[in-house]
Length: 144
Image 1 (cartoon, rainbow, N blue to C red):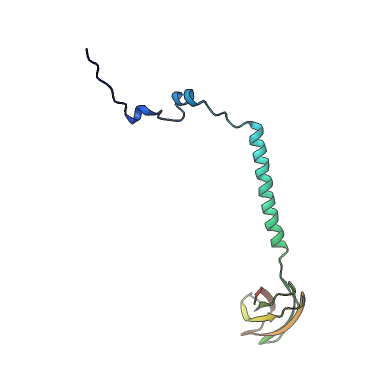
Image 2: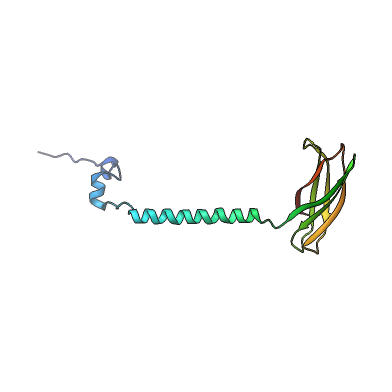
């Protein structure tokens, strides 16, 4: 009586799943993460997240450059404004001023250079407008 030799196919070479009993019997089962470890990782993750949120909030609340309108005088076709800029001493900036009417529409705009040399600078300028302005705001200050 002759026996035919069987050829092992790829399906016979390894278990079909990492969860199969043959795999577990051969290599063992990795224990699940303990409750203490899960809680510790959760607390550490929350602390890291809280630190990142706190850092971002602190930087947004305390910008390196701040500009504030001190006073302004309006006429029918212009507004004269005095504004104060707090900035690093060695930076030259360009601040954009927007004049707005009663409805909040922008009726005039001006880009004003702020020179380097002092950390607190008071600047006065006149913004020409297309209609009677109601207020003026410093919309941005960027490095110039």
